[in-house]
Image 1 (cartoon, rainbow, N blue to C red):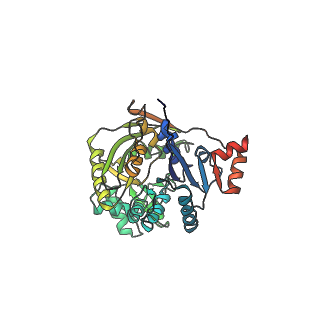
Image 2 (image 1 turned 120 degrees about the vertical axis):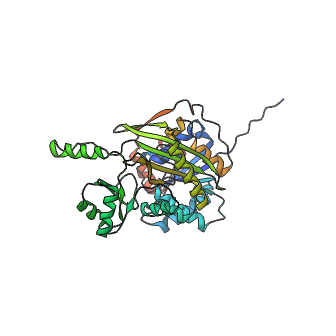
Image 3 (image 1 turned 90 degrees about the vertical axis):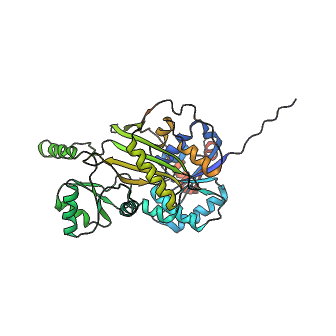
Length: 379
């Protein structure tokens, strides 16, 4: 009897901005199943080391700078690569991809996102607050505008400190903790800023202010504290694939622990968010960030409609977010990760990466990079 071995063609995944932290998490979450896929990415940064961990990459304009130019390049990449699934890795990628998907309903590729209006809502903290108020989801108290009477009422209702945030932003950039009415007024005069109820422990703010007054400014400090994270996956037909609650806590400047949260309150928030977002047209991942208010009640302060920087750590806890999304949106069932669920706590830390400047220069010049071409160039 003759034995025939068939080589299954690899499925192509296209990551938007896949060289960053979220893209590296997607790759890590694939784990030992990585060989089943050809992974390609778009990037506007040719010297990002994470790009060179991927099979192929294309230089594209930054969406924030030239959305039309990005659209032209993206359409070419779709035609060339024919990806089974397109995965956005940054907030701006999510909003852009949702608009593209609505304008190209007959694309042969699946897009890991929902409707464009909801994508814009999720990426805007003021629209998120209004959406949650309309759907009775427990979002942190929020305020915009320069009405002094409204500000006085907001301070009476929420106390000080407060948090000033840009309506659209990521990675905690541009966020301030304000401790006086004058600071709050100045923050609201900034373009597209809102005030938000402070969640967490106000005593931590007072302790920091005491250190600054009596000793000096600590070189490293954070007021984030313990974070409660809810990860939801909504399938292409609006079905809820999973809801996972975790506690994320920093244990040093470059590491954090992530453990399963079995308590009822975040689970109830996750169920409510999943129902509302699915009914409103969201599809794909949805991350819900919560912290307790001064009374200990969990309130939402942010949404991310994508995989996150803790996706790989959650895979170690048995939550195969990437595998579940691939299965739901493409029908391809991945084998289970051998280590998934072997622990209830995982630790995430930064890892050193490097890239040859020669490779980066060749990529910038040609606009296209592939692993096989690089091997040939170095032979």
